[in-house]
Amino acid sequence: MAAQQLIIFPFQVVSAQDQAVIERGVNTVLRQRLAGEGVELITANDRLTPWLVDDNSVINQGNAALAVDKLGADFALFGSIVSLGKSFTLDAKLYDGRSNKTTLTYSRLGSSNDEIIPLITKLTDQVRALMNPKAQQGSTDVSPVIALTAPAQIDGKNTWKSPRFDGAITGMAIGDVNGDGAKNLVFCQGRQLQIFKINDKELEQIAVLKNGNGEEMIGVDIADIDQDGLAEIFISNIENDKRSLKSFVVQWDGKEFARKAELPYLLRVISNKDAKPFLLGQRHQRLDVLFGDQVYRFAYSNGQYRPETKTTYPAWLNISGLAIRPTEKGLETVALNNKGNINILDHTGEVSWHSQEIYGGSTSYLTYRDASVSNRNQDPEKLFYLQTRLVYCNIDDDPAMEIVTIKNEELSGNLLMRLRSYKTGKLAVIDQNNLGYYEKSSSQPMANRISDFGLADLNGDSRLQMIYAVVDKSDGWFSKDKSYIVVQDIDTLQ
Image (tube, rainbow, N blue to C red; front, side, top):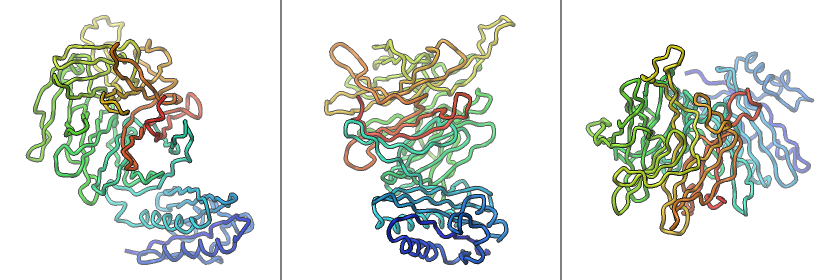
């Protein structure tokens, strides 16, 4: 295979002290670490000068693209380092001439000049991974490392936020999906599933999986259901007609994330502390009955996921908004109905408590044909909105389990049956005392809505963090959705 040609433009350095030393050190490390088998560097100033602007010191993306084209190169790397007193910012981009777009955006904030070379070293690792053809095979694409923003303080606790992603995040989950012991963030956006490794205050993208045309991923769960020591990723997936479920399972096979099974069910993993997680699936068989009681607990045997135990639930229930926990009397279930009321079902299936307030709030839906509609002037096709995640979790020092869920405020107060739009969203914690259930605490309200969340100990200190996806329209009402991830200590709930 022919060597890939990489243009390295001299990084611009703006610093009141040691500017020449920093420039020399940075550009030397770039050349040394990026040179090697399979890579041909283009660094000579006489070849690069025609595409430099602003006194031969700054390169922009347009000129990088032109240089790649005129010199017949495959990639161009350019960037800058700007000193801000004792701290500095490092910004770099890798332009890919094969796809005619920037494939790596690398931004870092350092507290001293001693951190510059280590950050440049991390940059070169990312560049080499992108240029390695083996990293581009199949469905696994290595992409940028994304820095979470510096912390905002809430009562002395940290809150971290990612940059915005294009498109609405419809589902997310946290877990170790490749067996390296590190936590992964997995989220879906329509036809795309993104997998990140969580590194302290960074999200390192390790794979992007593309779905087929005419399909939409709406939910994600992670668990080791087949008990092989490596967690699977369960994706609830619907076809664009909004009537057919075409969910699937993905697992790391040592080389890539490969599709393991396809299941025509809505999927939800039920996890409780000190108990093995299990997989539920729900399906509908007729267009005039959306779900009914078609809820099954799955077992894995002989290389297949099989619906094993049928569970009887009310017809209004959908498992996207459901959690289960064991009690002394048997299994207790908490579920959101289609309107957003929280219902607690005892071990007999009877509703023991029903919230007056509205929770949940999703824009994902399925369609079904209402057989009771006989008037030709009425549309028999109805929308059934799925619900958001609930979890049982002990978030404080008392022995009781709380319910954590999403509380999105709908603009019309849920009066419009076919259209849902939200103005604010937050996480809410439901607790119980001798008077009954009540909303104990909540997170700071976010603009638009929260689409999904997870609870995990990300830094090994036995304290939970909330990780949730916010969908907003930051550029105006008619703009396309954007999403971002928030990481927050759970004890910041108010």
